[in-house]
Image 1 (spheres, rainbow, N blue to C red):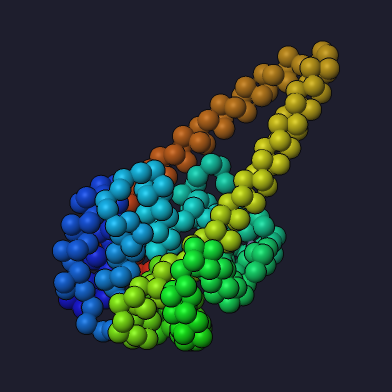
Image 2: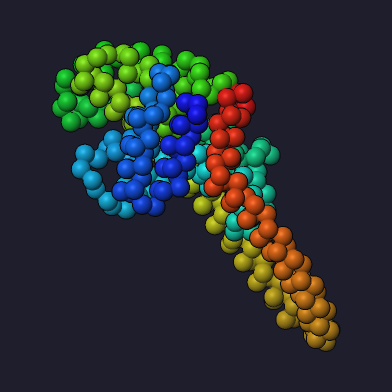
Length: 304
Ligand SMILES: [Zn+2]
């Protein structure tokens, strides 16, 4: 079994068992001993982070913890509820998979979310700004020693994360941060435990900045746009109803024609449902066998 197979096995375990926190912990740690000899990626820190064990010293189990972990796992597997995914799953009668924010007729894929023109700032700008925001939070908390450590390493940190990724070809390492994958070059910056830990904290802070400033903003904007749409639809329906009720005479005939049309419609929906059921069963099979997840990484590696 190759290093990547081990890694993907570890990650798919996180995904499959995410509903049971205790079990995830055990399985992940169990797999870590065999994961990756190649030191480009620190898979131990990555999986600890994904299973939410960096921020929590004691084993807490609250709603926020569960939400965070769910986001991290879905995000790592590029399985966030973007239009491309929802459209494929035929969720909520979504009409197409295009990005509704920039309206550039581009598919709203996981990748598109992070580079959409509607985003407030580019990934690089957010990364640069994050150093200053993080410094401010340290100053506020009077963590003077940590401020000094940050000053010592901030340039190297930015240099490393802006370098081309060796795992996600064609992208820089910011995309590793986006997915929650910890690059081992960050560990090589120092041997001092406190310094290592602060670099990790900065990395974690950046991960959250991306989530808060891009993903959360995207969700807010989509909710706003969808609300406008549903109001428009409701108004349209009301308008139609008003028009129909004012049409005297031919109204009954209309109703009959409509009933016939409805029967046809129901027949079509039922047939579609049967087809969907078959496709979905096939899809679920593929995912649980791990093929989809592995393909995902392979496609990235050849530089898509
Ligand atoms: Zn867009």
